[in-house]
Structures are given as C-alpha cells and as structure tokens.
Amino acid sequence: MIISLSKHALEQARERGISISEIKKTIQRGAKHFQKDKIVSDYTHIRIVYKLIKKEYFIITVMIRVGR
View 1: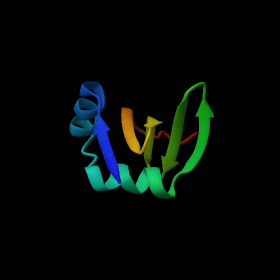
View 2: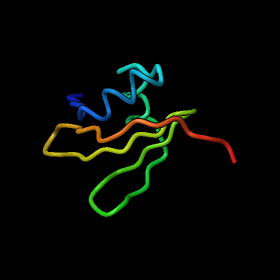
View 3: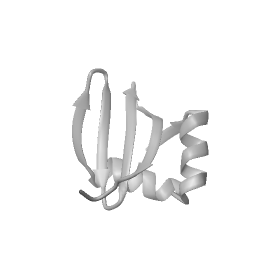
View 4: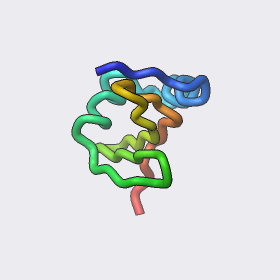
C-alpha cells in the first residue's frame, strides 16, 4: 500500500499521536463513505479523509472521532 500525506495531515497525525500503521488500518478496515471526490474512512477512534489517485492513497486529513 502506497500512501502519502499532505502537510496538514502529517501535522494532524503528529499532534494526535496517530501512527502510519493506524492510518493504514483505518483505510483497510474502516467503514467508508464518499464526499464528492474524497473518501472518508472511520475505524476505532480515527477518521481519515483521502483520495485514491491511481494506486496511491493521498491522505488529506486525520481526525479523532468524537462519540455522540
């Protein structure tokens, strides 16, 4: 799996203590829904917004999910 992170996503992941392996798991195992040309994936406490460009996952942002 090839992933690249935007500067914003990298900063957010570092601030929130989310590792690259957690990002990969969220992409692979998370529940997905679509927003225009983006994919949102939720897994455990993490939400990832990304685009699939050819065979590369371009991570736009990384968030901590807040319970309702």
